Length: 299
Picture 1 (tube, rainbow, N blue to C red):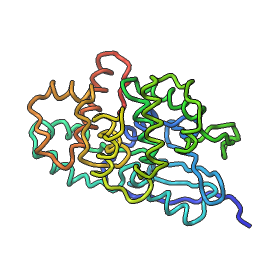
Picture 2 (picture 1 turned 30 degrees about the horizontal axis):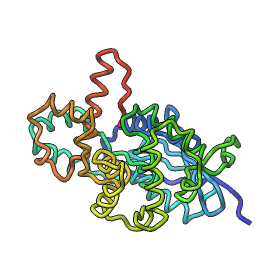
Picture 3 (picture 1 turned 180 degrees about the horizontal axis):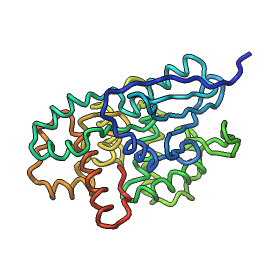
């Protein structure tokens, strides 16, 4: 008989690694109910072979590595989760290669040199990233998270948290979304319609977010859905698919930063423009903090 236990894995990376910046991204974008970030670690509830489980990711102080702890998972679960965590925390990035690529542009050379440990954090699943990106269109990060909570409460399955035993709502399936009343989600009727269109495309097989993903095909499929524009498509490619060259050029902050640094030549650093995006977002957040404002941008 299977008895739940905690299994651990050490996940190495090549330094430098800006752990605090990566953790801050997940803190700002944590999914209600099923994700949490404290001062030192990220945790998430997931479905495993034996029901619900959870995992925790924290930095090993004495090594260039993260420590992954998984509860209620068998060996197959742990292998799958380890692979996903490496992608989420960008542990396979090559800092030397990134430095060389950024050196192709004079301005980015200086900006990157101030943040050489930045990593391109990705969300747990491309499926979740599509819906949260739509809910996050033209609103603050904080309000986008509030809308996601309402969305999960309206359509997701009710469960008990496997660690705290508190009642929670899971992220809904496409079928659950189509059968749910989304009227209490405080977004526009147009965005609610977009969410349903995405769910319908998934249910009908026109949008496949589970099998092997082709970035170009997925971009085309997303753009074919009414209400999914350039920003949403590029953001999903960047944070969901992990496309290192994705660049949401219509993003307010990125447009503002490129205006401040018109000498940046993004073509020179292809195919690594995603790292330019996170560098510019970081610069903007730091500038707001220095000016005495609350840094609400953590894209």
